[in-house]
Amino acid sequence: MAPATGCAGGQQPTLQPGLNAAVAALGPDTVRLAAGVVNGPGAYNSANPDNTVTLVGAGREATVVTSTATGYILDIRNNATVTDLTVRQPSPVVPGQFGTLILGTADRVGFSSTDSGGSVMVQGTARHIVGTGSTYFGIIGTVEDSQFTGMSLATWTSATIVRRVRSIGPSPVFGQNSSLVISSSLFVSTDPNGTVAGFSPSPVPNSQATVVLSNVTLIGGGGAGCIGLGASGNNFYSAPNDFATENVTLANSIVRNCATTLSRDSTGGNRTANITVFNLSPTAVMQSGAGTLTAGPGDGNLNTDPLFVGLPSLEYLLRFSSPLVDRGLTNAVSPQESTTDLNGDPRVVDGNGDGTATRDVGAFEYQRRPPAVTTSVAPATAEIGQAVALSGSATEADPGETVTGLAWRCDDGAIATGATASHAFKTAGAHTATLSATDSAGATGAATAAITVLARPSVRSLSLSPTTFRAAAKGGSAVASAATPVGTKVRVGVTRRTAVKFTVQRRTSGRRSKGGRCVATTKRNRGAKRCTRYVAVRGSFTRRAGAKSQFKFTGRLNGRRLSSGRYRLAARAGTTPVKTRAFRLVR
View 1 (cartoon, rainbow, N blue to C red):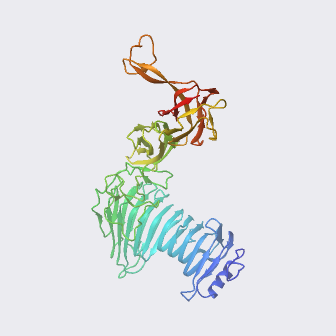
View 2 (cartoon, rainbow, N blue to C red):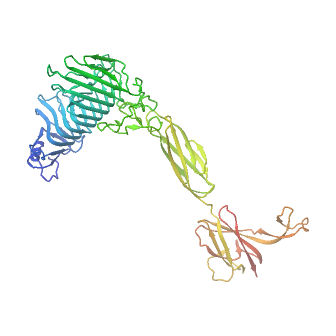
View 3 (cartoon, one colour):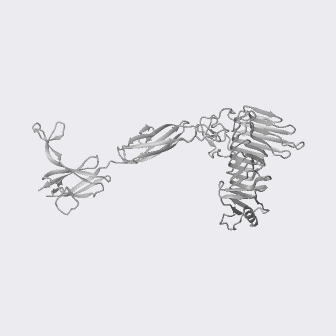
């Protein structure tokens, strides 16, 4: 539909001609709507079950379909799909305008209306719906992952499933059903004296209704007339067609802020209303007519403050210390129930840390998430004995909790507390330092920093060839060329790339001290045993890191020619022990 382009079937000027073209073209078709306001109404139907249509907008917030005509703004049938658009009734309301009817699937669709009579009805599947206004959203089938504000959720007639739905308004959810399952959903009434959730049988003769609410949270408006859950057996038929039974089960659920927790009523005749409750002890109950109120075998039938946390008010999450954590039924989640909570998190979690995963009570499942921990280390590569700086942080994932402790543990057994620490490793290789964070719920998270520890650089080998040579008459301490016979060829090997400092030690005689050391000869020790000692010659030279391992030593040191005699060439890398080789200088 113009201005959208690129469809193989061509372009149509307005909505209805586009839908008409889709009806005329047998088989599945797509009608594409561009961003902006699209004027309706639009209707689609076909007697051929294979002749279906997909109506696609540019996005729920981008494409708006509206109409100033009577009847439905959209009336899309025959297992159709409507997606990525918003249907908006104009204000003021157009007399005789009904709203929207979709028989098929609605996905990522918005509905907006200020007309209490302008209903929205989906018969099939509705997902990711956003509804606002004063009307109701009717579902026959399945509605999931949707939110309604002011717009009531109405569940009608045949088997209906509601999963992960938020609804806030005067009458958040009601229905007339033969079979209904609602799970992992939150309903908040803005009417002080309204009913949060009210159900009755389908309006057909001799109707039987089964309604199950599991892991729902019902929040009332707080007035004296507020009812949390209402079950009515009335099907509005007279005898002999007045046989009607409403069976409602409320399990793993919360009812708060209502003067009457549960209301069960039937107006006589052959009408019956029954309520079975698991994990809830009603604070106030109203009962009239035939039927029963049964407390099931829940874990203590709780009636206590749930300790909500996580404002804004549409959240109603459970604090870690809530008595409702892990207090739901232990039976498996049924195929009709949501396997996740209202936030999409797993439904069955070990929330209290006892080793057994059990569902909570209410729409939200406390997740017992550990703190999210991050770490860093500087430098990431260090030498043996060099201190590295460890730093980290922890962020709490669950509302209402705080990080209570941070602790470091290195793989060599060293420990420290706090966000920062300093540590020097004593062995070379790959090492780790792990920061653990514990929160107020007792959950622990951790992250690990990796450190590469290098052995301290050292001289691995040192050789001289020849070991007897003449010192050069002039020049520096070392030359790269080995062409002259003066001097000696030096080969040095290091454990890793590093600078090497060379010094020279002259051999001389000495006397053995009482302590066994060879010391200089003095008048006092002339009678002691002779020994050989080496005395450092003033001066040195350094080969830079990465220099060739082979070079020519000239026999000169710091511009001075060494005199003839016996010496040692000493090589040192860093602070590691010296490696020496003896040589002899001759004239």
